[in-house]
Image (cartoon, rainbow, N blue to C red; front, top):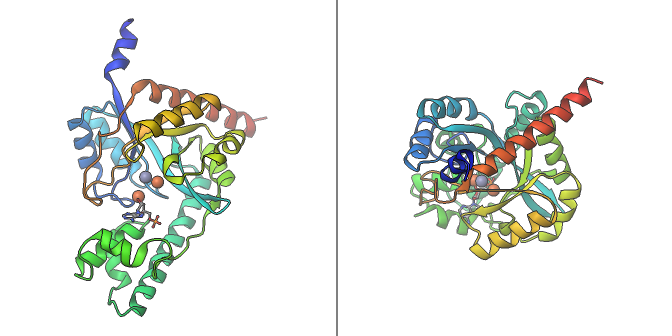
Length: 292
Ligand code: AMP
Ligand code: FE
Ligand code: FE
Ligand code: ZN
């Protein structure tokens, strides 16, 4: 084995993490400290509809000797199915990305108000301000409503809150505006990012994968907390068939989902190198388009 390959063999990465800037609980320093504890060589921050945590987490990772990959997780829709796209190595200052993210965040905030109004109609006295105070971020979501219900003593656990109110087709569930899958891919690409379909095993809509690959999607998140070994195997096979990159991560939300997951799903560092190489190609072709 050459030294470089050996180097890689020991290095692993967790490429799917949420922080307190979306529905996770860790701030930048704690994220970096946990990553170090788990002996991760690299991590990617993939907050829902947010890149706000990237700058601080990059600094904390640098101090801890961990490589940081800026990312986000965008929600899209195709044929009535919700799809999540991870964007890796995105330019977190990209104007169009920031404009669109601000729109998605406004949609999220309005949706919280609507969910709370529906909860109030059931004579459960939650206030939207309590949810916003607890969320303390620009991209609040249902997990924050669930935690606020628990904090106010109105539900025993977040799970109960989802079961009674927040799950799809429960009384406080509110549909959310979603861009199309094509728009998500384009948004990530024009920001210089690599677009990867998150946790395809949770969508159970594998038939969308060939079309997404055709539309320029770069990769599949084959390894994920909720993918069994057989599921991971199936997506690796699909990735090979459609010439897609392979990624993986724990989808850790800190303490907000009971179990801390960071480091429980890790991928070899070669996958990071492959993502970086693809990001360089995407950035080069974007630059070629603006400078004819
Ligand atoms: P939102 O983006 O507001 O629709 O919320 C989605 C988030 O809620 C994701 O992070 C999910 O993991 C989480 N979530 C969805 N369903 C449940 C559930 N039944 N119990 C706990 N968390 C859930
Ligand atoms: Fe989440
Ligand atoms: Fe997701
Ligand atoms: Zn996620």
